Length: 287
Image 1 (cartoon, rainbow, N blue to C red):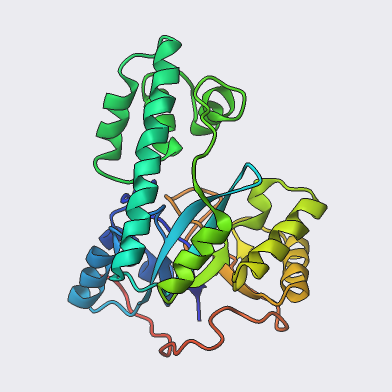
Image 2 (image 1 turned 120 degrees about the horizontal axis):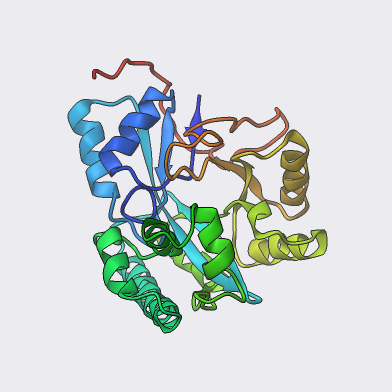
């Protein structure tokens, strides 16, 4: 069974619609998919409807990826199997969206101060109602020729110490974990190696995440080597956590795809060990 528990639609910073994402997942042989847009569940209804209407052999896990603050680091926590109708949880996500707007306004102000005009207006057009992210800023700056690639934008404008960087204003990590638990979900520490923490800090993160009520860490994600997977799994074992797997798919690239290389070794305990999942099926999508 192929399981991918971390993916994005254009409701945040992905490029595919929810319908296109679930169709792509089936075409890539994925049996179980979590949609985990940034601080929003706006894509879930369309994804559910597409699966039902097209009778896709895909189990959808309702999810979200919450941006959090931990010792001035921005840490992302994925919530899996959340109750997407929980009114209190929806209020929490609305508060995160307000934080995103405030941060975007300040980023735009700083960029405009450095002679890049009409930033917020154009970023809002690109986002088209989606949860605002730095990716939308990066797309705009590439579009107007300020950089040749998204990576260059982040290095030159949006990273710490540069013109458009604004310190995060996210909810504390421990609080976000409690939001997810209260909504009946499973908190998962997303892409742990992406934060570029040294061994001591990464261990501390795993320990405090577990103490806060966290349940799993992404042990398999895009471009992780077998050695890295083993190192992260050892952290899970040390702090009583299970293992998750997610591509963090945003769009088609040469280095990442839905369901690709998300395998575990036999001794790894997956986060879905107690989930009731259907038997995998294979179908060919019509063109």
